[in-house]
Every structure is written in structure tokens, then in C-alpha cells.
Length: 204
Image 1 (cartoon, rainbow, N blue to C red):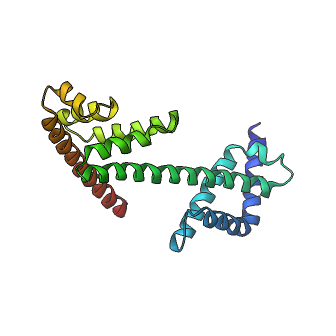
Image 2: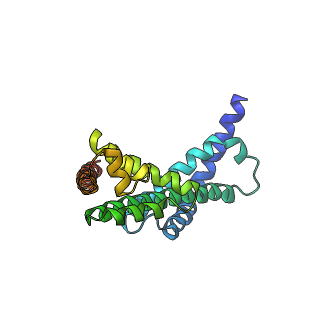
Image 3: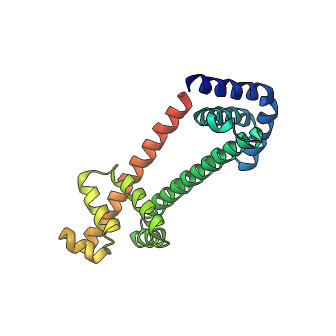
């Protein structure tokens, strides 16, 4: 069995050596059409995808020797990987857009707008609600215990200003001030962390 697997692996290596230029050109076009890379980044993303495809092909090398059209099989793996990457990129961009929009609404100082915006992000369906609440949980992780309590009551328990005031045992005006200040502090912490992550990305 070990000898057979070695033979399968060798067969895949020979296939890649003989077809790599053509495969790279096709995968590059896939990457370009998927919007995963342009300009100088196009080649880098293409090579990265090819490496990932090769690893996945090696993990299923016993299938490679049974297919009638190995190129189509290999490119099918590439298409799936590109699709997964595109989906992940889209979800990340949507998450960042959603969190960013929450923070920008918070910056306006209108807690009613923030409530409305958050309720809109949590209404479409179960998956969207879970994702939106995960975004709020991510923001809460940046808050102090006291701010976290205020924000949790406001956005995870969906309390309006009057009910928030009752929960905090303060006046509605005081509740609005505490919520506004908590949002400002969380927004500042979020942007500070984003700046650190960007700097790390540049040095990576």
C-alpha cells in the first residue's frame, strides 16, 4: 500500500511538472475574475492558491489516479478553494462594514439611531442574527466591565432608553449619557486595535 501511495504521489508530481504553466495561467484567470488579486498581488495570490490546491490534491492523491481528466479535477479543486476564499473575504468585508457602521452611528451621538441600526442587522434571519450578535460581543470585549454592562443591556437585551434607565437605577438622561460615553470609549478602543492590526500587517 505504501508503495502504491508513493507511486500515486509521483504521478501527481509528474502531472504538475508537465502542466504547471497552463494550470497557473488558468488559476490566475480564476483569481482575477473572483476579484481576489490584481496588479502585483495577482501573482502572489495565484501561487498561494496553487500551493493550497496542490496540498489538497496530495491529500486525495488516490482519487487523482482514478480520474479520467486530471486537469479538470485539479482545476475543480482550485475553483472550490477560490470560492471559499471569496466567500470568506466577502463575510469579512461585510463584518467590518457592519461593525464600522455601528461605530459610525455611535459617533453621531444618537442612541436611537444606533438602536435602529442594530435591530436592522439582527432581523433578517437566524444566521444573520448570530453574526450580528457576535459583532456586538466583539465590541463588548473591548469595553470596561461597567461599560460592558451598559452596552449589554442596551444591545443584547434590547432595552430602550427608559428601560435602560430602570435597569441602571438612574434617570433616562443619565442613562443616555452613560450609553453615549460607553459607545465613545468602545469606538476609540476599536480604532486603536484596528491601527495596531494594520501596523502588524505591514510588518508581517
